Amino acid sequence: MTQASTTKESGSKDSGLRRAVDHLPASKIREVANAAMGRDDVLAFWFGESDEATPQFIRDAATRSIAEGETFYAHNLGLPELREALSRYLSGLHRPVSADRIAVTSSGVNALMLATQALVGAGDEVVAVVPLWPNLTAQAAILGANVTRVSLKVQGAAWRLDMAALLAAITDRTRLLLINAPNNPTGWTLTRAEQQAILDHCRRTGTWILADEVYERVFFGAEGQCAPSFLDIAEPDDRLMVVQSFSKSFLMTGWRLGWLVAPPTIMDALAKLIEFNTSCAPVFVQRAGLAALAGAADFVPSLIARLKTCRDTLLPQLAALPRVSVAVPEGGMYAFFRVEGEDDSLAFAKQLVREAGLGIAPGIAFGPEAEGWLRWCFASRNPQRLTEGVRRLAGHLAR
Image (cartoon, rainbow, N blue to C red; front, side, top):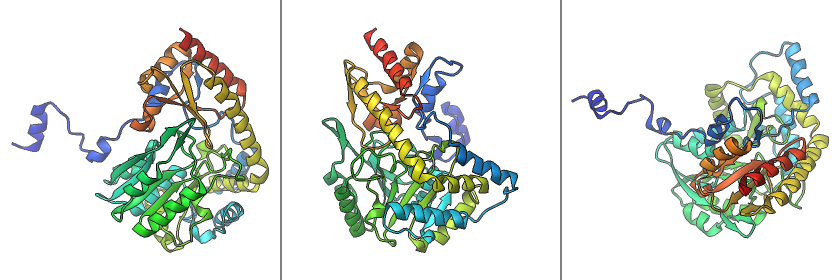
């Protein structure tokens, strides 16, 4: 009996895809958003982006580039002037980062996939700190890796890392550590001491670190103008790749522009991977990135101040609701909270759409460790939208 006839007789259907791809879960955030399709009365806070448009000076740079005919291929690693500008930008925040360590990518998620493709193959062992934006663990799974999840724990009003559990999970068989801080969805941020302990341990085990630091500027701590970064303590030849993006700190989510910092010895290999994935980021989008960096000193601090106002508007109002507990985020643009008695976050999020006109992301979208929690993106031009959202949630809970 052939495999085809076996499949047919058993009633199942063979898609023909690789098993790892066929079994990828669909986005549960999209599932909630789809429940609001066709409705204009829903206050949406489910996606990880501000409702504020990209600043005009950044948009103008792109339109000028298009008007000047810059519609051709660029270097795989990005425009030299953009890599130099990124070098100056990063070096102003961290230890010096030379341009020969920077690859421009077609979004931050593209940078994450490129790094994972460069490092991980079938059967490799990967450790991930979770809850986590699902793309990171899904990328490793697509490539056939085995992912071990080490969960953050809620302590008091914040999520915390069990350092002993993490270091025990990372052995000399661990190919890659995935870590996102400031974290989406919890707002947890690594301390400098934790970063140093992780880096020292991974040096001993030979493990690569893939650090997703796209929220480093969206930071509300007292340490300075950004969250602690592995770039502050690592050497250029350490087994470290750091991913960054223009999306969050420059309000450029739809532009799909990011970058990757890596050891200079692997940049030629990354250039080949970029060629086989996207060839290059569009030149006019890179021109927008150059304009964003040129205006960063003025624009980014004002944006972070507005986001802090949004955070400080939303969190106390949520915390005042009966049955609601909120984890205080140190970074990122999300309030992560739970409602006592509502343990099925997907069902509850859909119910809020239907009955309260309120759209938030279910915690289960970020892994089983976040089930029962909900993520509310507080990045908004108008904090009154947040207050209205809380009013709708309060009304629903009262009913």
